[in-house]
Image (cartoon, rainbow, N blue to C red; front, side, top):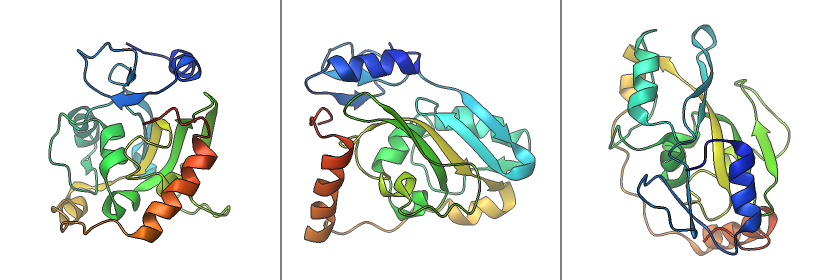
Length: 188
């Protein structure tokens, strides 16, 4: 299991193809297991901002936030799911909470996008563009999120409506992003 950025980068650099998983029992070399790369990196309750390693479970996050009467402002089906898995499989209801992201691209390079502030204008917001990319563009290692007081967050924790079929435009856009973030087509 990988527990440091350097180990994650090394596995990406040495791989021909990789699938990202949080399955603790999976040791197949074609898979990169992010489950042991977990924990809170930084938490500023007064600023309503938290930065998390991608392998951190929703339950761990909820426990840390509850101590300050705060909560995640989006729906989660399972508290055992990791924040990285949620990032990779969610849509706009999740991306609204994303402030920044750290990734390892297909070349094994560590890249940071966004930050820990509510207003960040520097062109495309890559941290939000990668939400829902299913691990096909990069390995997400850390995520910075805005959080809310529990009483306010509850209204955003409702199950979102079912998403429709992915459009041709969306598939074309993802293909172009793939060329930028994973030119060697490591992530499958």
